[in-house]
Structure formats: structure tokens, C-alpha cells
Amino acid sequence: MFSPSAIISALTLAVAASAHFTLDFPETRGFDEEIEPKFCGGFDKVGNRSQFPLGGGVLAIDSHHPSASVLVTIAINDAPTSFDQFNATKSAGSAGTVLPFFKIEGEGVHCFATNIEGLGIASAKDGVEATIQIQFDGGDGPLFQCADVTLSSSASATTPSTCPAVSPAPSVSSTATSTSTSSDSAASQTQTPGGSGTQLQVSAALLAAFAAFGGFLAL
Image (cartoon, rainbow, N blue to C red; front, top):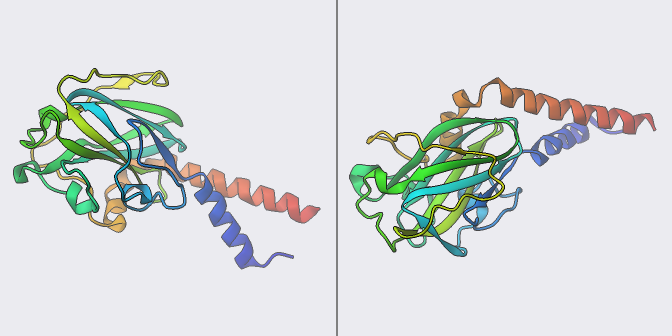
């Protein structure tokens, strides 16, 4: 017989196993679902750097949740190492929100247009090195992925072939700020956009895990 604590632990793992997303474009620093709740998905060292258009650049993520809230921020820094470096307002002239919190529906690839040159960040210029961070919350806490880029006024706005469509870039308030400096405060920002879809996802995972254990115990 399995103890209640063992079953609860297994159910927790079953839910966590489905709780992730991937950054498909531009190239991510790295992916490991076990450490994805950490800064830059647990990869704090700069990875391969790709050219990214100042205007019209496209981001592509692959969601493994039926519903999620997403935030995109940028640090104008060649090697950011903390959330604080993505947390400055435009008035500080450092970095800010590329795409404010928005909700996505459905699992699979989602693509979004950006307009970094329209953010009013004085230091966001051609040839400048930067890092883009995606914050993703499917209802079980914020997850992160980073892409290291070189901003370019001449790079073409490439759309990945996997994109079913590209959502236009929403307007960004001049007072918008980026991610919080902790996972706890980041999670609180995404509770409302998460909606009932995320609760259904967690419930479905729990039901599936219960069914699996029921079948195993019946053997």
C-alpha cells in the first residue's frame, strides 16, 4: 500500500510535469523544466546571441497549458543577472515592458510582434546588446525564459515557420514596469489573467494522476 504522503507527492509531481513552456524564437538561453521558475529559467549566463529587429521582431513560445498569462520585458544590458535589471521604467532610461501582461488561450505555438524602438528607451539602439525575458504563468506560478539578442535596425523581421499567426504588438503605457523582483510578487500579478482555464488544467492533471494511481493499486 502507498502512504497518503507518497500519493500526494506523486500527484504534485504529475501536475508539475505538465507545467512549462518553451521559448522557440529567438533562441533561448536554455530549457530545464525543473528550474524554469528561476531567473531566466535557471540559466543566468549569456547564451548564443541573435540579431533581433528594433521594429517588427517576432517572439514565438510553445505553451503546454490551455490558458496562461504572459509578460515580455527587456534589459538593455550585455549580461543581466537579476530581475531588477528588467524592472526599470522608461523614465529611468534603462529597460522596460515590451509586451504588458496579456492572456493566451490554447496549447501550442503562439507568436507575437514587438516594437522595441517604439518603447522610448533611449539606450535601445542599433548594435546594442540586450536580453529579452518571457514570464509565463499557467496558473501554477511564474516561469521564465530568456533570449540574448543584439538589437538591429537592419535585421529582417523573421516569422518562424511554426507560427500559425502573429498577434500585433499592443501599446505600452509610459508608466509600465516590468517583472517583479521575486517569484511571489510575480505570481500575484498574474492571478487575475490566469482565469478559470488554468484551474481546469490543474484539475485535469489531478484527475489523471488519481486515475493512474487507481489503476496501479488495482493490480
